[in-house]
Image (tube, rainbow over all chains, first blue to last red; front, side, top):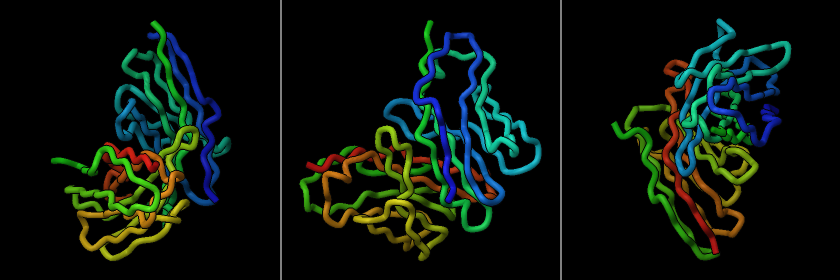
Length: 115
Length: 114
């Protein structure tokens, strides 16, 4: 069965510092991978996605993620964090065929940004 | 373009009551899903649909029913509410891989069962 692990429940980063949020997945076929961001009291917004091709994908708000098949990882990065990036971040995996519509989410990482 | 609209935003139910959470999208998306979000558990899939007239169960379907009579609407019915169904519910839609691939989420319904 597919699964997603986000090992960090909370991360605190100073404003202007770099950020990396970890995501490891388990999926038996070609994975489709997503990162979503959720601000308090809001729905989820898609940051970026990986389907195939270039393993480094660019998203909105200056985020990027790298797919590493050998490590079953899809870590999210940002070179310089802004206070407005404070939110909860979710990694999700789906698959081709009948698996795409059944996205499985990780438990989330809450990002705190210190001044 | 409204995207995915969920109603109501907040609801309090008594144990045993039934209700329907509404979800509508105006993007002509084929795929629609319902998730529940609980602290420390991420989002868990309740039911999903790949098109009008086609629905299937997700990870946590017990106590919930869905139907998809039109492309636009995907209501979620709680048959007999229980305190364990206290949660935030999100509806989402997608065009699938042929489109942008990602799901567009509604703003959620916060449900409390007392």
